[in-house]
Image (tube, rainbow, N blue to C red; front, side):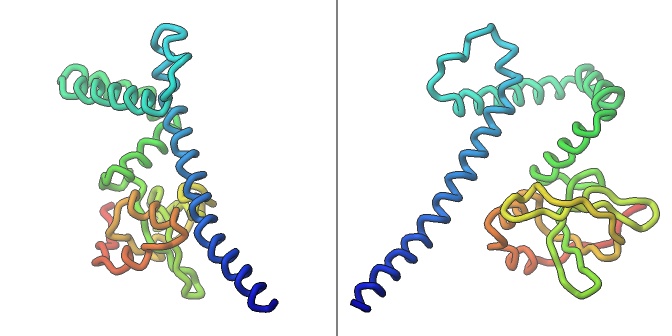
Length: 204
């Protein structure tokens, strides 16, 4: 009887160890696909009403719409006059919206952009010597910095803190690599830390 109970217990635990990560992965993918559709909805609204009401593959259509609009915007930005117009609109209108600035910096960080106006991954050391992954949001002129302390596996949610810039060590990794490790509950962080450290000095 004990062997039977042990067999059932072992089989149940083994199945859960496989099933639970799979279910969480499916939930994360479902959330990501829903986000893609939500991002494409304003684009779809520009087309004639009812054009996308009965589509069977909304995610595929959403991806195509995003890629199409990205291509045309990229093409337009290659033209000098349209580029100047776009930069003027961004400076005078869009940059006044905090959400636009935040999303732009986040997007540039995900695409591997560099500079002080891009979200950058770093390691923050506490007074007790503990270290945690953070995103450097912006640096202040008084030696402090604003950081986002991400939760796992929700790698873009967490508290915002003001800390001393000297407590931060920049990671030689882009935002995509870092967020991927956090979304996997820290699997891969050791590899990120094993890379050659970046220069922690900043230009003023």
